Length: 605
Picture 1 (cartoon, one colour):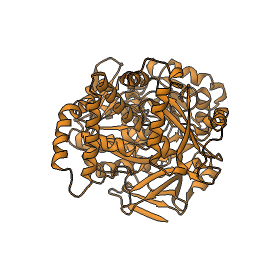
Picture 2: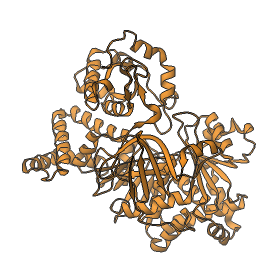
Picture 3: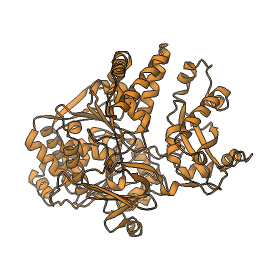
Picture 4: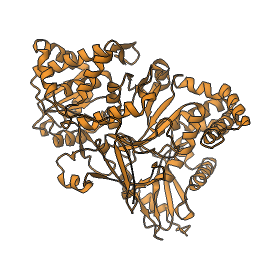
């Protein structure tokens, strides 16, 4: 058993809440900018100072009081990421209410489960379409009293309704709250079954926000720090980032327009960014295809190799050689500067979570001039529980324990976590709570390794371990993440439980396919044709060989099947946080998996 802990940089008092973070920021920097947003997708950006935002929070909070909302009431929010969500979060917290985030892509049955299990009194939705989704199950939600629609003027209605409510009533409710009060119930994405309601307290958020401000000061609290938040606010990581911004002196820009992300980055010009690995893969693959379209693919690949080599050399005693520094300077003028400009031009750090980034991409981006701080966390840990820090980064790991966190890996390789950011309970599930919370430690269900310096590597998920017919234990995540890095690959599911060898189901990225075909001198073809094309299959076999370099022969992928249907949230194979629902895939594609093993080809020796 190995263990590592990092002491807290900031202790949280008993009366500290998310609302007091905003009050503190008003006191120290009320006239400084804080929020930027667009009221319409193509409209101009609006900007609010800390004081203006705080005043709006109080105005909406007064409206909540006027409408009869009580402390402890649960309110569902179902919307894209937008200003009104952040405003409502802070207003609800101001009056002691408990927001319950719901993905805007959730089905009616998912909405019913979350609202009924949480005991939601109100639902605030973005538009008429989402109101209809809630409406379709409302007759089965006896506790749901009202549905407010943002696009129909719900927020303005609250501002108006609260005009006669004294401000001191909001202040009274704020003062009555405590750090260990329930702040939110966040439902897990449901990759392994029905979503569980994770109860998170104000202490959970405040502890992480204040320690992030202290431990990541040069990222989130540097002069001029600003971020663009585009990930769904229904995800705990995005919710934490907005609280971190409240606690720091950074500016928060809000947008859900991921289709025009490059344009938005150019407008906002963030200094740090929260993203998932798939975003970085898309940026890299898109840049390579763009270079190929200009006849400069070899130049890009050379520059990428230089960036990776240069970054690796930074971790050696002697550092980059004189020749490597010269090559890096040439690549800077040819490739890196343009790539950074495409990401807004001011971006220096990004925080990546949700899935492994991979060493190749980590070194590439650092070599280009963007340090990606890879971290690890779960809904139950209010997001980060380990993260690489500026000046304390080991690419390929998810960093040391976050300030105020203890990590433990038992003899079976399972990771345990302890700290003030660990959730208090699963809602209505004392049995599950008792199963995972033991003596102050949270059993994550993930497999990991701690090195001699206390840096954590996540090696897989305990419940996802594949045991081949030969008795070999295989963690699929390593292979899946490496193979998914190929430009034309969208999703990968490694299979082989009780089978003679490891195989994989692979889906193709319809968006990236045309550019990849063109850059490789191949004719246009649709996904169905590409799935059986010899040249495409040969490229995938080469990608499999590269992925297999990370594992032993017994763990390597011996055979793949290319599917003509991608895994998406719409067809039920991805969660809203873009995790593959492995059990659903294995069940629904059972006959395809049987065919993959039909000829009983290689063994796993």
